[in-house]
Image (cartoon, rainbow, N blue to C red; front, side, top):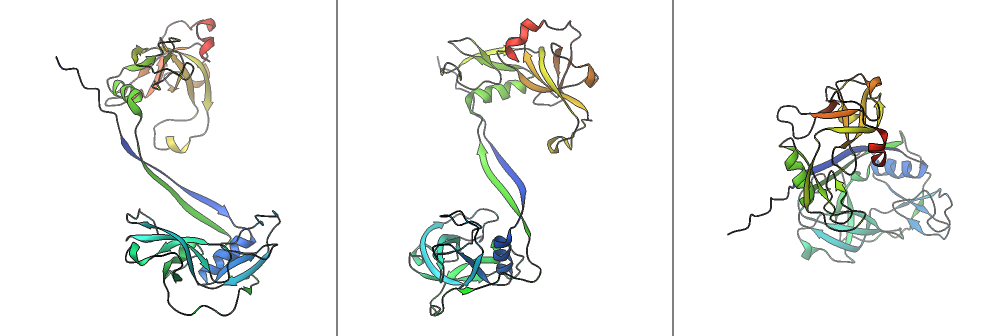
Length: 323
């Protein structure tokens, strides 16, 4: 007799992406305005070091920094790592090296990409120079990348700069993006698969006997694995709730009119409450103790909302430990 193989654990690619908008102080404004005009600026700290990229506060004394200086667009690689699989929106779409470059006249290193034919062409101590982007807008990407350089080193050191530019850059929008593959694990895979069958399944702790919905694979109280599957509900009790008056971004494309109610619901047999939207009743009639049941849409993989069952309200003592 052959034992049944466990169900395959779910995996799915996910993307977290959002624009991050920030205003710039005088130091960062001058730095990015300078890049737009093919000028690299650093800032001199109290101990005389030149920091590139410039910082607004001295990392040693925490005092504001204001003494800007112009450094060269050439420099020396201090360390590097080869990137043979560039990701979307990285500086180059062909394999390249991430490098820390100490520009001539600077005392700290700048992180950027180095365009090189292969890792054998990169070494610590090699000389490089900035390759400027064809179109510059006042961002770190105005440096398209670094490239190998065998020319002479500049004779002059960092030169004082007033940080004044025509039409200075006063703010930036940085597109943040994280691509990853998410796996909910064994316990939540079983939970999600059950939801597709319009069932809600939790797991019971063998020690304290609490039923976790959604299951977590282990009891956070006792620290032991939970493998005993328990079907709960479908009905439950509203333990607490809030009235939502502003349509959030994640509901913008849903047919949900505000105000609506979002509640914690203790399904019958569960040891803690899960959350869901309450429908089928005016928002101002939702109350603690209200008995509700799930409403599924055709093809839906989770309840669309919960509606009143018509049963009498649950006694407070029956759910007070789940609030």
